[in-house]
Length: 283
Image (tube, rainbow, N blue to C red; front, side, top):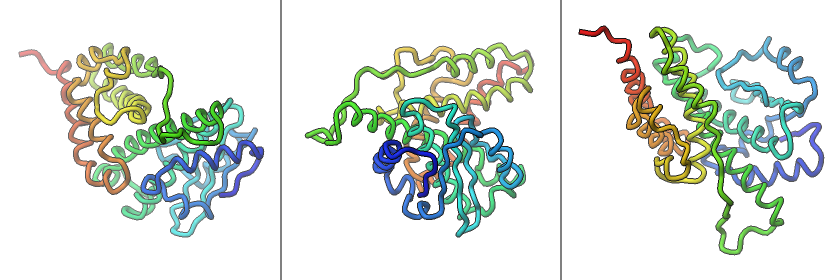
């Protein structure tokens, strides 16, 4: 991979972080020669230039912009927003985009040019479930890479003697998730509820992705005493939500995602149906 505007120290840390990504998760060797990574001070302007050639795919954020080339031999580009990253956060940001790039490359090999997906085709080919899964995977893997690089910053280059990394108590941010659940609870119409529902799903997969680095079972309350179980039960159903988390955990790489995609949809639909009951006519 070519990297522009990164210092030698940053490049060394990035290379260390890449070593914490499993080959089944992202085939970096296949992508490396075709990927350019640029840290830019003109993020908004460069994103606007890319938009003329690469439409939004549903994975964009303010920290970085991925230009995924659907051609089998095409070159890819990742813009990192210098103004939006601090400390070691560029590790998390960059790994996130590389995970999305690896996932898109595999999805595109199965379904063709994702930029040409019509809405009906996207539904038929589980594209929206794919986006949620990729966000979950990216958060899990980026959290791992960031945490392990941070550990080495404190403890030196050598890995733990027993091969087991240990961390102090970890806090999980739930403010955005709680805000989304609150909007669901106060939605006045089913149309508004549907719009808020997908935003909550996104916040859930981000939240679960963070937890998934630290636990193998779908029991968020074991790690996070602030897990909003009651609000989830009132809006989309706690059992449905935990089943979705378990399915996401099972989809550890793209082939497993293909095996789990129907389960992901099943639990998303169950969450949606339970939430819609509050708008059902009273008999």
